[in-house]
Image 1 (cartoon, rainbow, N blue to C red):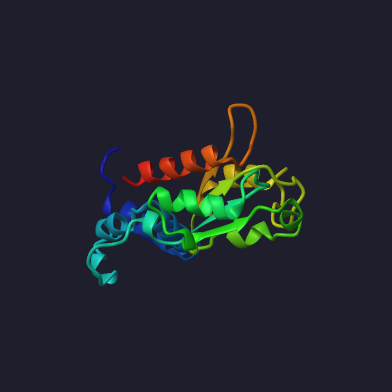
Image 2 (cartoon, rainbow, N blue to C red):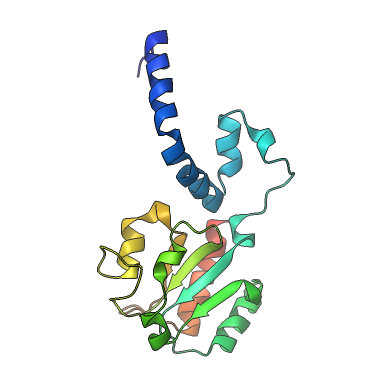
Length: 177
């Protein structure tokens, strides 16, 4: 692309400022989740706004929510998380099928409190799925609105097993290594 003229830059600036209040929080949230916040602020010449030294990795902040009917007791999943180097208190488990039917999945959208979603089998019709056929479909259709999704599954179906949980933990660590 050829460099813009001064008039084109002024027009772009005005258009950007008109949309900034709508787009900025989403861009900051996405950059924070992916560990790119410092780079975004540096690009904008605003690194000083963080006012801190080393930023923690997204892996070290926020909760990891585990959603879906589980074949494994929560205590065993917490133990697996500890063995993989995670603080087990950072996990929130919603693993009862009946509990999931009434859980408001909409509270996860845009939340800065969650670093990742681990999803297993769950009811399709739940609060907070809006236009999508299921919560997983909604997250997949709107990846910028949610923390990263990790599906817990065997080779053929969604299933929370000790193995699928461990694999998701390792994949999460790998992404932020």
